Image 1 (cartoon, rainbow, N blue to C red):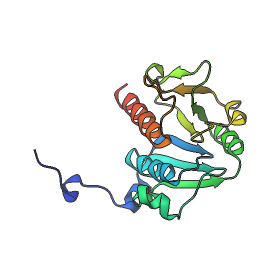
Image 2: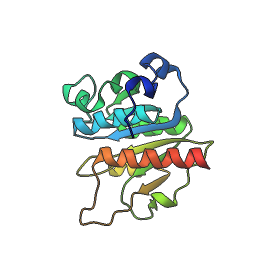
Image 3: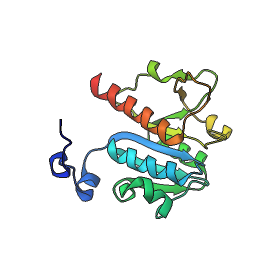
Length: 177
């Protein structure tokens, strides 16, 4: 077995990517403090052709050296906006027709493997602060909450890991349902 070369991968260029149809998912990063998590979110969003990232509160924004370390240029391809107030962007996304979902451990959360995204809906996926999670004021505005089952001694995953798991699961379920 031999690895594919960059030419063999036939990746699209940034301008073509910006014009291509996107997966109807937007990521909302609620007060995420790690620039590496932000950069990883951009790179993963590029990989799954996600519509947009909303960076909220204390979440860092491009251009920033620490974001670029993990984004590897994806800040140029993925649309993004900064919002001081996460609740305001959640309200706007609801008006735009998005189903609002927090990725969090909460009472009445739905386990990821039990959640079935509908192909005709748009989703706003909210990922919270590394220590405190999704803000309580934001939690009051969600339609549902998805939890990633965990079986070890730690009770949380790194934000960038959670983003990758959730997006891969959504894409797989949407493409094969």
